[in-house]
Length: 50
Image 1: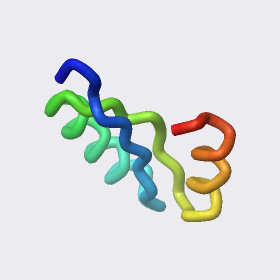
Image 2: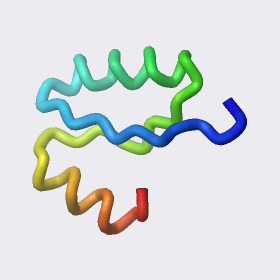
Image 3: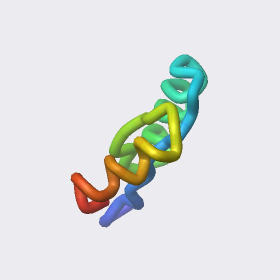
């Protein structure tokens, strides 16, 4: 992909989140992070302009 789509994974099981991240990265997506809760996702997006 020329401009990969950025994805933030919200998953409370880190092993599952890491697996999802690996699969998405292999498909060409840009995984910008893995966070365990929705509240943290909002903070992450606000701080990183995702």
